[in-house]
Image (cartoon, rainbow, N blue to C red; front, side, top):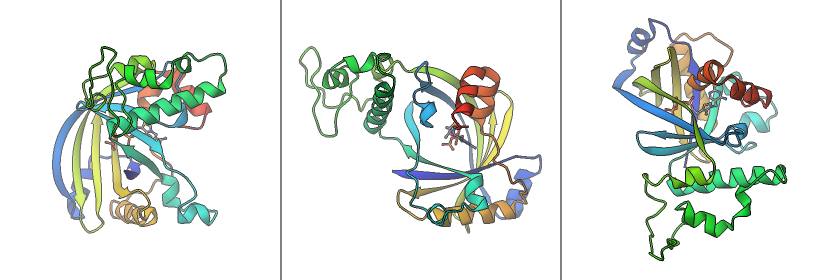
Length: 257
Ligand code: V4E
């Protein structure tokens, strides 16, 4: 599993030129459509969990466990750490389903009497959702063994079982650069609802040195002449503010955004 360390920044008309001047190399342009899912009462996003489908693949971003990193254990966060986000990126469909299921069921415990998801036997629910524990064969209700079930990107029946609905979808045109000397990627994103944002990002393996990633991001930001000392809003912040104000307010109140 990898951890994405990322700093967003405000793009200007000159950003692309500056990237080339500092030696960043354009590694491609692409377009993708994202669909984000949550329960109608925001069980996942209130836990800062972001479930999406991009190019037919499921992806889940979850908060990293805290406490293991230098700036946190020393009691003060560096400026760069405050400007960056860190999320675990999970792409294994079985693990995604398991984590989503756990998060939703965990929530059920807190709101006693309001939840219907736990009324089902967990194993039975898992079978209906096409969910398999790692290495465990699944038996369909009609008795067929379907070891692959749950691995399929196409079988989305688990969404309705967990009451997951799409709350945001948009298309992004992305131009990606790498700055090899720092080992960072810089993405310039243009969302189809009219928002432009840049991201400096480093992927590290779980347990790897996040501090080094933060330093490389900070050096890149300096090379790009970025001066802001506030976190820059991502595409989702702007999308929710504009099109899902109730959801946005809930996440603001819960200090997720
Ligand atoms: C983690 C998160 C969201 C999921 C989307 O993440 P993001 O990196 O913004 O999107 P994108 O398209 O650049 O994904 P990539 O291609 O890099 O994988 S939506 C909101 N969050 C939380 C969040 C936050 N609280 N603050 C900031 C500045 N960004 C994200």
